[in-house]
Length: 370
Image (cartoon, rainbow, N blue to C red; front, side, top):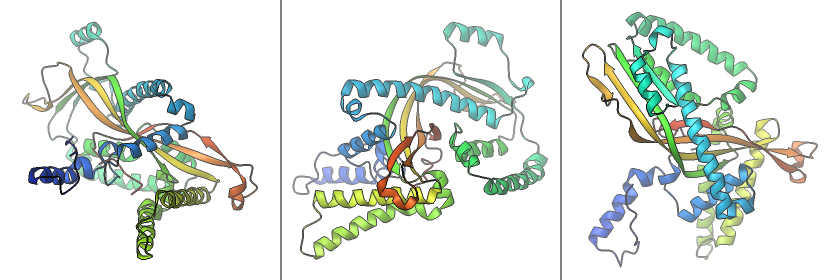
């Protein structure tokens, strides 16, 4: 992570400081959102990230007193970080099962390794697998028929009810991430390889958390124009600010800006409730979490013995994975007779389940809201 320059005044900076500032603004850290991750044009200010974090906790059902009090907030974070570790292990195991259909004879059993593992402690993820290269016919001809079959299944999914989309939200790994590994398997190494992956999460740290009000993946999929919601919202604010300047004012003051933002977000939520078809407005909570693991990883060419990836000494190493989690929270409008009576109703929260949408930026954040 590049060091953020402390001074922004041209009068106070020398040439070296100006170069440092330009490098900071041009860095991947800044342009890819910093702690917020992909989908943000900058890391934003710490106070703003704090507001996003607090509102995410509130959307997840945490009371404001528990959010404000440092000790109760820390207790909640400790519980969440433990849950994120467990979810990461489950996600990796799910990826393995989904990508590699493990027959009994494919898994390598090594009694000596098993005894060593019992002495040193078990791993949540424990894979030792030798893969034969896919036959050329399977890569070409059979995969083509498989693709056609998948297309047919995809069309059936589109025709099916919203239950399929709900089931997709409850899958541990998001569909794009699953497809990435399935594609990698279909284009596997041309020779026989042995894969060893043993992982045990030790701890986690929540880097950031923010709500995407009014949007979910399923809603954007059904209404692709919603992807530009926040870009259009930002343009609207910029135009209002420009109008204020042209009218002789300096800029919108904080109260005016806050009022415009609140009105815009309320409009986004109301539109989400109407488009959902069931009166439920969607909020997607996105959390970026560093998972610190004890890990053994090695991909070895069986014929040559060459190490393709990782280390061949079998020693566990400290590895940190950046994992992006999503959860859809729905605000259900209660005590109204129709969607026309939005202002007269009360909002009730329906909490979803966490889903892994990306890890180690393999999908550049797998962003759906910009």
